[in-house]
Length: 240
Image (cartoon, rainbow, N blue to C red; front, side, top):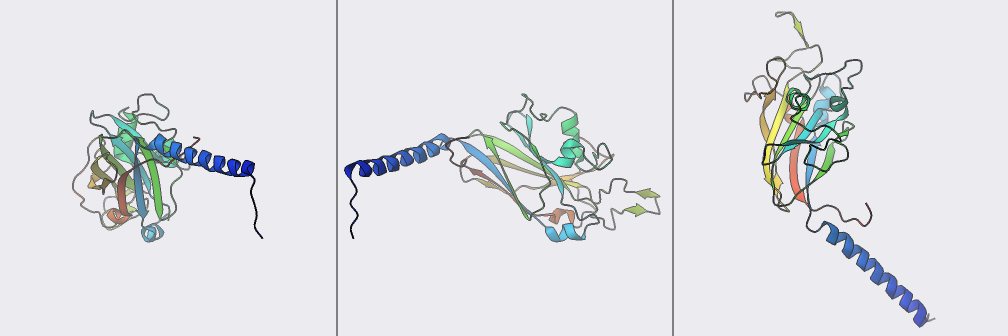
């Protein structure tokens, strides 16, 4: 049996297809000349499970532009809010980021001093193996990407929970020191950066300085199985 459409219904269907096509084209046009940095992390779940607390790593991501300005991209909630289960702040978790943030070198949340257009920079600590976050950046620019990470309770023979000889203890359960990753990327679509370990940060030995030597690090450098930063176009949208 053949179904015949009247001219009226045919025009409605064709008109709808044209309208949808225009909306899709509009969505792509809106993002055609825009760029984002997509940070992709693979977190080593095995190392988390064998650490004393079994909690995912605390980390912070921030960018530095060509003028030397710094702006936060993402910080896990406890570090950003100082929510450490009864302890007001634990700067030892991310010493370098803590120094930059408290000294005003990094923009605060909802601050007009930042150069990134971000509604919120803090989020729950990722518990899955893979974590992805994007940030909008101007095209044809160059940024230094900084990442600092610490896995609590990943003790080893160099960084112990208690040291009877020196009569010291790890008050905040820091374990191995926080590691700082660094890389430089130009915002051209398709560019990919794999940040490398720049050094480590320790309190009270250092705040604004990064220790380039990794003496005593045994497993902390494997907490992130991989880190990639790729320059991508934003996802097309009609209403935002």
